[in-house]
Image 1 (cartoon, one colour):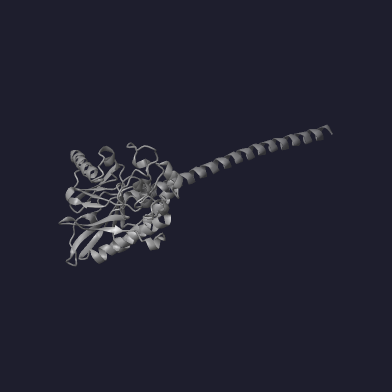
Image 2 (cartoon, one colour):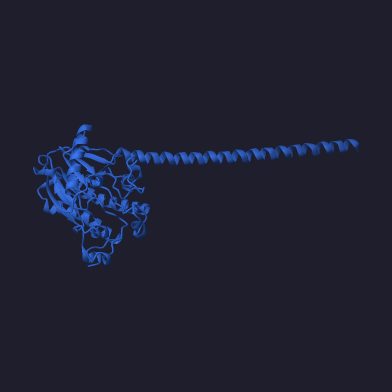
Length: 366
C-alpha cells in the first residue's frame, strides 16, 4: 500500500508539475501572441506611413517652378502659340454677404460661391476659345493669389461664416480640383502656382515665420496636389511669401499683397493704385538684389481689377465682390470679377479681359 501511495503521490506531483508548466507555456504563448500583434500593428502603421510618404513624394515630384511646356514652341498649324493666365484670388469661401445689409447690391454664400467658381472656369474657356482666337494654347498657368477662404481672423467672420476654416479648406480644394480637370481636358496642361493670403492664417495677427505652413490657402493647394494625380497638372507651392514663375520669357512674381497697403496706405482718390505701385517697385528692388528679378507683379487682396503691365503689375478683383466691410468704408463697388490675360512668346502679356462671375438671376437674389 505504501508503495502504491508513493506512486500515486509521484504521479500527482508529475501532473501538477506539467499543469504548472503548461500554464507557464500558455502565459508565454499569450505574451508572444500579444507581442506578435503589436509587431503586426507596428508593421501596418509603418506600411501606412510609407504609403502616405510615397503619395506625398509622388505629389511633390510634380511641383516645379517651370514645366518644360512653358518654353516657346512652334505651332504645327502655323498659328501663334500662347499661354492663358486666369488669376484667382479673394474667393472668401464660407463668407456670408446679406443683400439686406448691402442695399441690394450684392449677396454671397456657399451656393453663390459655387456658381461663381463654376463661371470662372467655364468663362475662361469661352473667352480663350471664342474671343481670344487665332492662338494654339500651350496650356494654362494658374496663379492662386490667396484668401480662398473667409477665415476666422475677425470676430464677425467667426460669427457669420457658413463653414469653419477647416471645412472651407476641403470644400474649396475639391471644387478647384474639379475645375482644373476641366481645363486639363480643354487646354491639355495646367500649372498651378499658390501663395498664402491673409484671411487663411491661423493667428490673429499676420505672421511671417512659418507663414505658408500656418495658412489654409497653402493647405488647399497641397490637398489638390495630392488628390489630383494627373500628369497634365503640375504645382508650384513654395513656402515663401511670394512665388515666382515664368511663361516663355516673361517673369512673374505672385504675391497676395496685404503688406503693400499696411506699409504704404493709399488715399481715397487713387485707392489701392499707389500702394500697389509702390509695393511693386519695392518688391522689384528686393528681388533684383536677391538675384530673382521679375517683369510683372501679380497682386491680389484689394478686390480691384487693374490691368497695368506697363506699370509692372496686374491687380486682381474678387469673387466675393462688394461686402459689408467695403460698404462701411464707402469704397466704390466693383462687381465680382477676375483677371484673365494671354502671354505671347514674342510680346509677353497681350490680350486681356475680366472674367465676369455674377449672374443675379441664377444666384436668386436679384
